[in-house]
Length: 105
Image 1 (cartoon, rainbow, N blue to C red):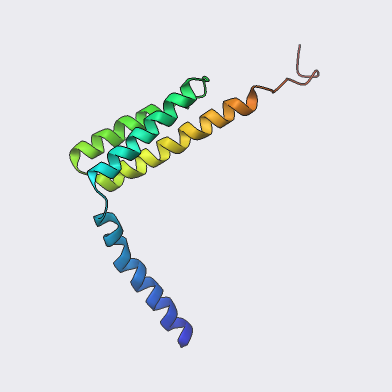
Image 2: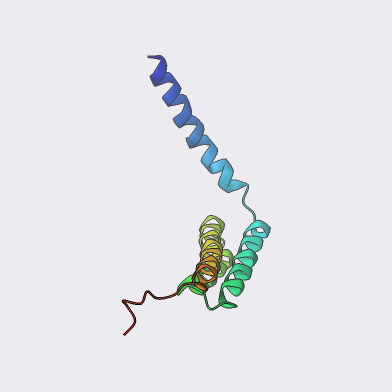
């Protein structure tokens, strides 16, 4: 009985907290996230590590921001920033990579 009460309380807290979290999102925060994503994309591009869809996600985030879909714009910007960071790290890690001799022909 006590476990069910705790679970219900947690679910209620999540249900009530989710709208409050998205309500605190403002255009300034989303614009900052888009700028951070653009910076990460440029850093990845500087080492030829930009992933295929990163720029598309940034463009879509800008569109969602203009249309007032702040949560969707924030999600896209966050994913794009992460892709930029990962693309940069991937290329930096592969700079020292050498093909094994048995693969070279």
